[in-house]
Length: 537
Ligand code: PEP
Ligand code: MG
Image (cartoon, rainbow, N blue to C red; front, side):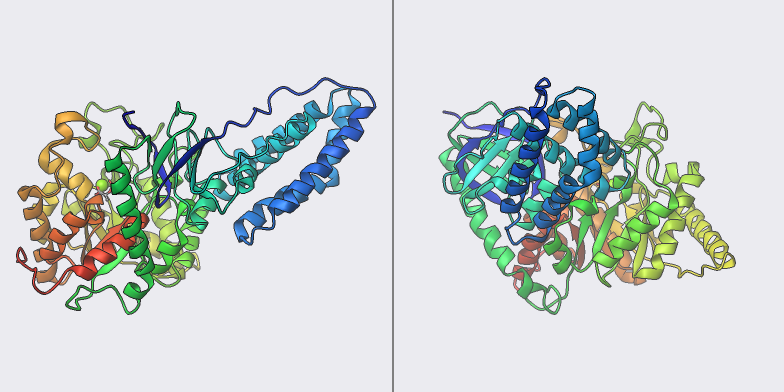
């Protein structure tokens, strides 16, 4: 049978090939009708059974798992919760209807919270509700028996269902729905288990599966070639991960001892891999869009401040480069961005920030206040003209004075810019930035006149190794060296081994990559040696 590929989103890194197990637990849907006086006893028995389950699941020696289950146990034991359920039952509804009614109310409240932590708690409660309802209905949905190294496919998985799977035999998890930042993805990352979410319907019942948690890919009935490739990748990934602590000790270096900085890109702190945080030289690009996109309302200054401060704490003294909001283009924000015929060429990034100064000022104030807590850097996206950078510098000065006169003195963090618009790359001498970071994803699309989300023949033009792109990268590296301004590159290109070698050969000595690409980048840098400086200028 020919292999079938399903593309989703990477949720936990790693690669596995193993037997496919599809788990479709019965839906805890309709609740039973009232059955008179027996309902109270049924409820008590179901609560006791669920409590026992949670105690058994809790014994897994893993902090996050213990936290989730403890929260569920406490909720279940809360007299207020039981009181509310019994009160609803007093109106004549069944235990199941009452449980659903009461818990749905709490779940809705948690889900409406802005804070990721509380939203995840909403998922934990939905998990508890389904567990209780299934128990009340006598449908206990035992987890499937797993063969060694199983790749489990499910539509969604709740934390308790995930934890019920045999940990020693589980090889990876592939979800048709799911979220990158939910508790199940966090548990998978904490356990080093590859996971992919958002695959859409997977029509399969059995067979073999290859799961790539770095690329976000599930391959059913993989061909011998795919299998061999995945197995080889798995071996080399394991080797690279094992050698990461040793490579990072004393700083990442090329084979001939030159120091190369490797930072990581942060999409969403809730989904950030702890190991990558520990071994990276810092955060080279924090895409602050996660605070704005998919939220019911804009984050206020306080919420932003707390998020930036917490991120600095996680990086424990290492530099954190926060990019101001980069919406527009392929990242519209309803109510803020406008419909444009050519959104990639329109009001995006810093252009939008300067056109909507209140939005930008709120973000800059939050960043300035957070800068008291660690080495924070501010980076601007889509800068085209020196005047844009200067306008933000002036804004920062003014905001800092305001904070000082309000009794809150703050340091002035370095202010740098993404180099992703060809006009800026070609005219870099005129920009007085404190650092440059090449945004190769956008630079390639603007140099090649090929949209970064293009498909088909246009997508083939998106070649970061095209001589025109490399010439600009080389030019930026040279301007930085001449003027003593640090230069980095934070586009996907730095995570690709072949492209990284070219970048090193051009003299680049600082990159920022996706967390899942850290170990590989470290290995490529470690191999880059004295005999191979061919293209270096
Ligand atoms: C880039 O353009 O290369 C980049 C790193 O930023 P983003 O992908 O967020 O546009
Ligand atoms: Mg960009």
